[in-house]
Image 1 (cartoon, rainbow, N blue to C red):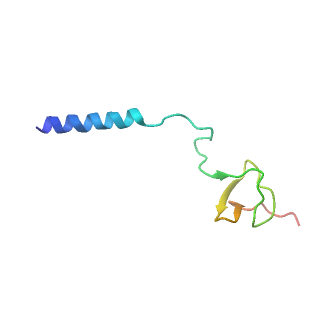
Image 2 (cartoon, rainbow, N blue to C red):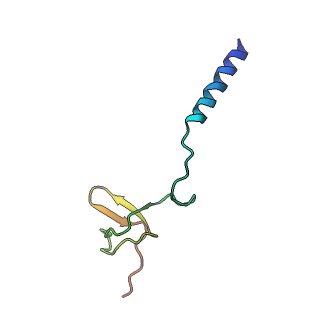
Length: 72
């Protein structure tokens, strides 16, 4: 009976692996940040560039993850 249980668990694991989505996405492997290119940061009122990480701030809009320094 123990063999049957082990065999059932193995076949379940195989089915899960067969159904797993392994297609590569278009983001680099280490990039886990959100991006909002072209949006205006609600904190500093500057444009968010494509290379800058961003965060969604509730329903009010987007902000830089870290706003760039100002050149005053």
